[in-house]
Image (cartoon, rainbow over all chains, first blue to last red; front, side, top):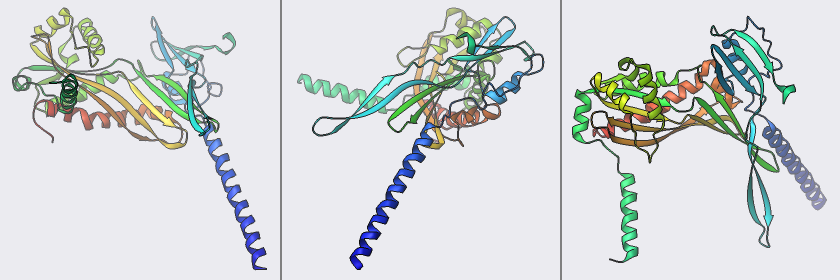
Length: 135
Length: 233
């Protein structure tokens, strides 16, 4: 009776530990997938209007631009749709001693600009260029 | 003396030399108090470079993002004003470079020259800039140069990130055209964030400005104090 109880308890404990481990893995994986380098709000959800929207508004909604250029009196702010992958690191087990080797591969690194907001000297939006269809 | 012993001696000399705190000469330290000094801080890149290691279960990925604050935040002016005040507190007869140098061309050239300073390249000011400074009775330039801000994060640590910016601190004698002092400092500290690393940009770069200023204030004036031979506060 006692042995059976201990066996059952052991199975139950193992099941709970496995569940805990699985839960931790899922939690870590979900956390790992979170992007923390994108703009505060997506360029597609920010409503802008030429002749009305100001630099301060765009700055507040989208954060700092990825690129900034000038053309005479005009100022051009370019926004990327997200971060670029600069490197990928993988681990592999090799040899009879099961040594873990880390391999780093360089990623493309460069961000692609998807939206360009053009402001006049007064800091008011005069033009929006959506580059997504042009790339 | 064997060759290996000489090599060991050389290594020891270099290592101990690296440990010692660099100082300006007592004459220069005295002149800095009496003669006109201009303070200038120059960031060669007006950007925040983010790198975040993202855990992807089977592999790790480093994601990179660059944000530009060029034309949005006059970082050079803000840090130059602060640096000039720090120097005054240290007893240096200092003024912000833009208050003294009205010639915009000379100011731009000075900043460009300061931007080229690295550990192995001493500051060289163009003759036109030296002339413009000497005309205003400026004897020294106390410059600080930084390549820009760098932010590092890790997706498994969502509550903070690391703000890093290196600075080169330079004292240049305009009259002799000689760099009297150079020191490199790596300023770094932890910044709390709630989720995105780009929270540093929120509210007109509030977190970046606050923590950048704090890191600068903690190390740069203290290093200058030591350079002037005053020891630690």
